[in-house]
Length: 304
Image (tube, rainbow, N blue to C red; front, side, top):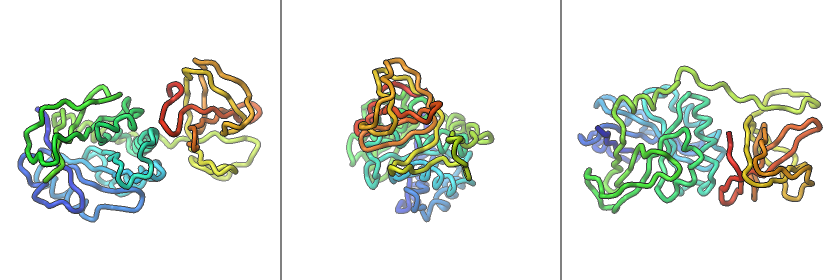
């Protein structure tokens, strides 16, 4: 049997939580790195008292995704494992709307801290912006037949899923209240909430230039060109020829032209105005490769 839920924020009436049609309640917890829902604890506890399944969501502000993930988890740490965790990816008040990489970095940090992969809430037309989370995250799509669809009866429609194999949840109305259907039972909901909570992944350790003394490991830093870098050990396989350069700029000198199918092992990435670059450690320093169009989100291969 599917589950039906409502989602609430600070301005929501308790009557929404008490609605007898709702099997579960999803509560807004945080937004950006500065807002905490002042009624979050009350709404969470009321849902629990009523015996409803629960979830908590973070509304993306579009700042540093790692910092936002840490802010979210720091504020709901005592509830981790008791409810499904969710990233709310919307355009309003989101400085990174259109960035096809932001959500991935957010969910990876949540997983590192908790062992849980959060679900992602997104409007149907913007699923492409979170497509690179399809291998690890459940999808919760928003699509309304009408803003006046004030009913628990589903519209005659099947939402699209984009790169995601399955539709896990569908928010089908947002008029008088946000109603959703989840194609899960209570046991599956609980599994999404608790997956590997006891065994979070250890923090990634960045590679460093051994010619320079290291005082403290860093996972994020700004170089002398003003670019922000994030430590991440990974592998990228190109689907087209790419330039390996001495710097993370289109104007930087070329070290080599890498043919399609090249395997690029990297230890950090940075998002510029035009491209997303990865940093490849080399015997005499580093090489830099543009692996994604920063404006369109198009990747020039796949990440492994």
